[in-house]
Length: 295
Image 1 (cartoon, rainbow, N blue to C red):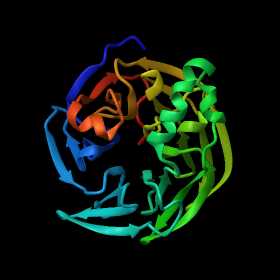
Image 2: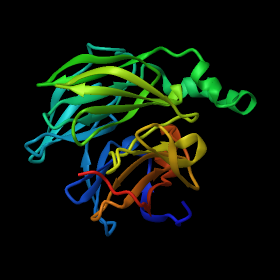
Image 3: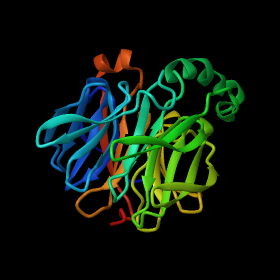
């Protein structure tokens, strides 16, 4: 795509997990413990969520679910009050953070986990990419991680054997669940029936996907590629159909806007929390796309 990107709003530390909801863009400024709500004119609201907020979704009553990644808790924000919906400290790899989440239409959360000290692992392995190619990341030793199902405040393992599960999406008809495996350079897609994930299909990409948009009208998704400073659209078969180049690493993306044709991209020069709170160069850029978000 050749259309120029436009900056909607900037000055943040590290933006992640954007969601188009109720006519606004919701995202987290992760390293400042904030949920940020942005209108299409660029005006913002902020909600404090301690514990490094990550993935978000909404319950059927309109309340917000947000992952407090460092605390391994799913928090619920309702009528201005924040409470713990699920404490995940006793399931999975409790030494490391939980990650992104999505929700289905029946108040079920699907939550990934790091399973690794991500900054230490990247410091060891990413420098090898220049010499050996990006495929080295999918071959490097890495503890496998899980995706959890959280229902009625209780967590169980929904899927295992993943290489750093990250952004995720659920189809509008609630039958497909797709999750990015950043250090597997792939997606994993599952059938979704009554909260159960089955029949895993692996889609090799050749790059490390981070955040994932909601699905579009043709079942495609946009994927952020931070190491390539790009975002890509992947269709239902796993083929890359469109690519947008960015001037900074792209960590997450979402499609939405009033007409469903806007691609929102979270950009930042670094994901290192020791740097981002001072650099404050994270921003949301937008570009118009051809295939709108599914409804």
